[in-house]
Image (tube, rainbow, N blue to C red):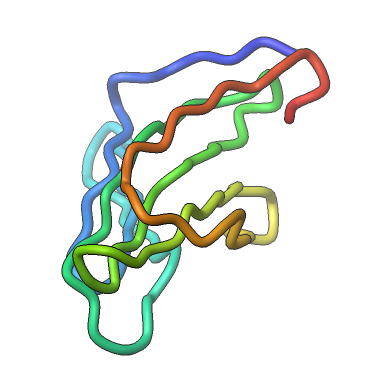
Length: 102
């Protein structure tokens, strides 16, 4: 599976993680994940696109200085699917897609 990055797509955040892309005439914005409770930040680590042009994102959610979660989101035809991968003590996620898309 090919994995590419595109300059016309960005990820930005506040309490809600969002994905925006330029349609050629305007920005289209979609919510990816809304984090409940008190957090100190969301850190987007990587955004890329597979051969089917579906977006994949790995990001961290920090609840305080010592506790967080590493999460994975995938955009398919019906919207975004989000999964918590693991609870973490540090927000330094690193990832890649192999030929099977994982």
